[in-house]
Amino acid sequence: MILCKVTGTIVATQKKESLIGQKILMVQPITLDGEPLGRDLLALDTVDAGIGDTVLVVQEGQAAAQLLKRTDVPVHSMIVAVVDGLEIVE
Image (tube, rainbow, N blue to C red):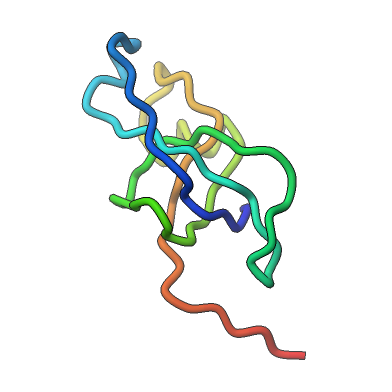
């Protein structure tokens, strides 16, 4: 899983039929300190996240298919949780 910040929404006038009704968001991977890390990703939103939310993203096609209980959805990254708080214990 990857810790990310939601930075935007994607509007698609045409989608694969299996994605109709699904929300796609742009997310930026971040460090535990909230600093940007790497490139933005597109992720299917399964938890009604919004811009500015910190989220957990699973980035494996097989995991996405299992979570959706479908194999016909062309998804590589999925938002699976909104992070309410983060505590780092050293």
